[in-house]
Length: 300
Image 1 (cartoon, rainbow, N blue to C red):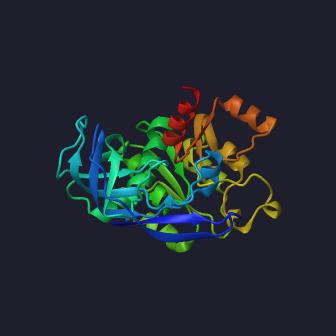
Image 2 (cartoon, rainbow, N blue to C red):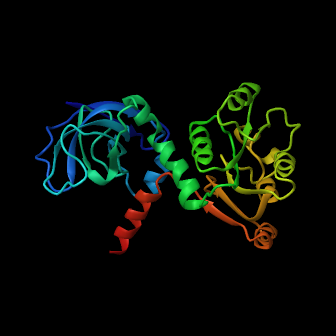
Image 3 (cartoon, rainbow, N blue to C red):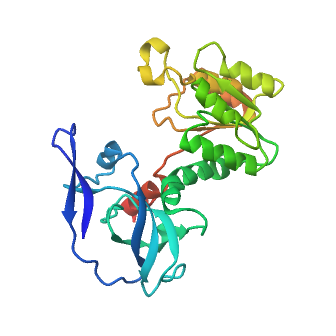
């Protein structure tokens, strides 16, 4: 039985993917289950995070979002039984790659897969689904009637966040980076209150949001990254992103800004403006549960 792994060069500049033969899984015990993998998503490998967490290995398993059928359960497993269809995300320290026929995984990293959801869609959406739910439910405490700005709504994360926000009864505003993206967002049902096309640089996100909210500003912002400096000092990939000052300007009183910008820098005037609005900033980290467990382990 083979699994896919990646190996990083000593200079950290080149990554090589290799298939390795794996030994048969040992007897499943305690809270672990044996899972037959039906589908696995390939998400980006955050090598920088692995170095920061001191989790470098000679060979690191590839593929962490998996969907499959439970073959065997340990004696302490309480949530699953053989033949259950499940989906989940393998932890950072998993020894098994998702790209393998059969793997061992702790039951707490799995949930039951809805019967009507195909294997590939379950594995392909689980990560962004968890991210979107975390941002809206835990970090911004979304409730009916709130206004939400979701940046880059056609992305996988953005599309799921829009659906969840509509499900909770929120008023949704979103941005598009091309005419095709704008048309796709306008076809969604329930319809989005406003789609702001930022591709030509003529439409200002702040003006659009304030106009849509009667000058009050939005209650919640989910960004897809922000610019910290002027356009001349930013890489080309960030030029279409809003500046951090724009996000602060369009926030309403008591607003919540959920950001994916890990290196966000707020100057004293920025903090003072947030203070006057009673606004808060929360960081959306894909690996927050893994990192929390790892940090706790360091102090136990």
